[in-house]
Image (cartoon, rainbow, N blue to C red; front, top):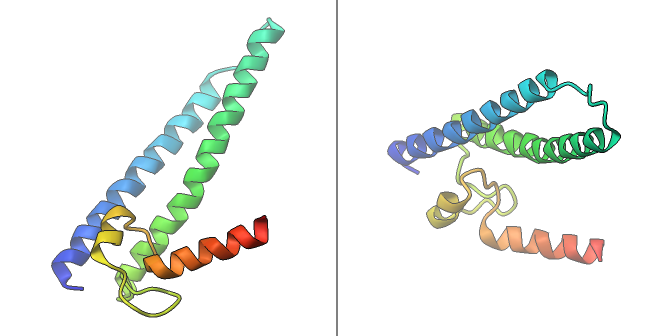
Length: 120
């Protein structure tokens, strides 16, 4: 992959990372500032439920952040765009859709099929 495309993907990944980290910071601030001093048990239950939902979303985003950071490392190492499974190039179309991808579409399908078999 040429340097111009690598820089394009680096910038795209860094923007995604910046957005996710900003959201995480906002959630942390919201959780710390909004107190649990609700005298009404129903209001408190709703607040607890909302917090739990928000934390589940942030946990998913935490995993996504790791994938983005790994993709940025692959750019630095010169292995970005190479499938970690088969060693073939990952298509630009796939990288456009999922710039954090570490598997080509065929290896990803195979992985998902195996997970489906194991899980079901």
